[in-house]
Length: 435
Image 1 (tube, helix red, strand yellow):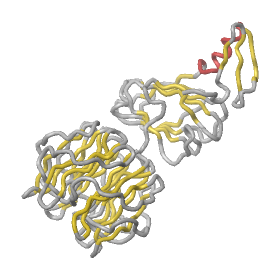
Image 2 (spheres, helix red, strand yellow; image 1 turned 30 degrees about the vertical axis):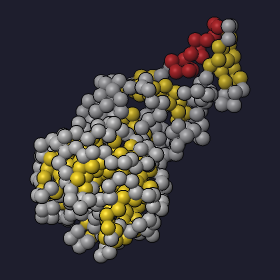
Image 3 (tube, rainbow, N blue to C red; image 1 turned 45 degrees about the vertical axis):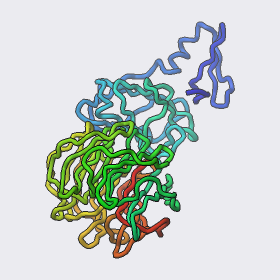
Image 4 (cartoon, rainbow, N blue to C red; image 1 turned 30 degrees about the horizontal axis):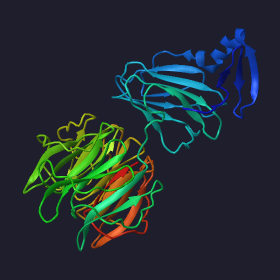
């Protein structure tokens, strides 16, 4: 990281050390004998606190914190007000942030130039983060971290709806901006199909896979971090339709369940380079026409579907392991959609029978809530994805005929009323995010 940050930059000459303000003006200077005092001011004087093991904490300027996430992730709330030069440091006490990371809530102040509309996450084992307040414009700035990334990871900013059925199977796509605005059609790439699935991989890219092109297929199409859909990649694993997909482990994905001459429960993992693996033996009730989303920042949940319909769910660990059935909560249904919101939570919504617009929130521990009364046009076979880092969007589907209507989801999981559709009305499509 380069540039002048607050009043913490020290410039050394052969005999003097100067302390600069944000405008570059020399505020004070000293000879070599006084350098030690300035070194304290530059970060050597933090007051290190007792080891923090809780799931939440509030940080105080001037302190250093050992964060032990062996048992749980930790959400850290920064001070509600800060002065230029205030400094805080966090360190991974047990080298466990890769499993349970820290989430920083900047509490109304900017963080590295971005406003407090989403949380930021650090999730690398052995990481330490030293932040300094630089003023209202850029707010808190990490002046040092010990990973290759200078900036924390945060939810993907854009989304993409793709494929589906509109009088015939199609392959066009529609991008979603970081403000939740859907663009007009982008010419289709790859095999036109419906009843497929999609998820993120690599932290900033996506993959469409499997589906119904007139039979069943396992073909996939990668999505770049600019939202460009690639040509077909030969299928790996059991060809099927009506399956679900979500990301896990922050940079990998999983396709699971579906219909292939009968309901199945096998899964196929997706590496952080977008490579689909062969079948993993199924766990849980074999079913299709279900959906999935992320929760907890690095885990997933697959839920609902046929036969039944059912509301049963299966959690996916941050290592991509599918758990046995969890008893269903909420209205049993199929042909619904799901996405994440609020960085670490999820939402299932819409579907049939009905159709319905009912939704069910998923906590950051993977617990599904009872029904929330539906908002917007009741419909089924729609798609959903996150956008803007911490928000979501449901779109398209069938309400008796195909539609392109969308409904935004706030970072608190509140579904908005209908937004007029943009792009080709269709059903049986899917969506994922990219960055």
